[in-house]
Amino acid sequence: MKPKLLAFFLVVWMFSLAKAQDYVPTREEINAFFNTKTMVVLLNNPLLEYNMIIKEVMEQEWTITEYEFITEKQFEELRKDPQYSFLYLSLVMFDNDKTDAQYRFLHLSLGGDYFRLNQMPDIASVPLSYFSVEEDNYNYKLALLVRFMQQHALLIKDRPEIVSANVFKYYNNNMKDIKSKTLYVLEEELSKDVNSAARIRSVYPYKFKIATKEEITEAIKNRDENIVFLHKVGPEGTKLDARCYKVIVGAGDANFYYFDYHRISDKKPDGLLEDDFKKMAKK
Image (cartoon, rainbow, N blue to C red):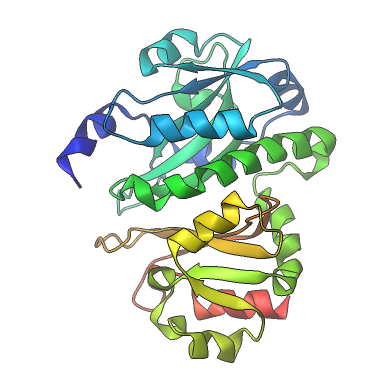
């Protein structure tokens, strides 16, 4: 971890398993969100690019509520006010995880009279990276992930019946549509069993490309409806044997087409697995 990131990590907030995974917003909370003003929390560390990028992203993407940018100090002052919702980064640790792995999540939550931060109702949350991973691993995808969160809020407003402790089961119903698009993956985000075009083709006989970050960034910028790409959250070379999140996202529609995770082990390394390709090919 580079020294310049230390200040950020000293002030980032800790969340429990309930915050990251199991919370289910009520219909009343979902409807209340659309009457709030969304306060976008900027980070104190001026060396991070996140503040600049999230400002651009909100201007380009956000349409469902009024919004305003605030500091971390203002967040602490305003978060108990129910007239506000908040878009912010958090540090998540899971209960009963002996690895003590720490993940960075992006949250969209309601304000209110909650004693602890992790009691604030989540409208949406998305894993971005591990604690120790540099921000350039996710910054280029921020616009699309924010657009997904906005669309998710609209979706659960119109269809509150799909909200559950595992709402991503709903998105996995889109898995069959991956085969009609070109799947972009980064070589460094593939497990050894599928780290070449020939190995992928042997288990996934559909359109794909081992792409670069620049090509994925361009597809997102162009809102290319024919491309989906892998958003992977893993330790990126660290020795942590914790979770590897795997999300296939539409570069054009910001939809989720596949959502899963596995515990990292010798048999299941940090990366998209052969089993993931087989699931997508079979669906």
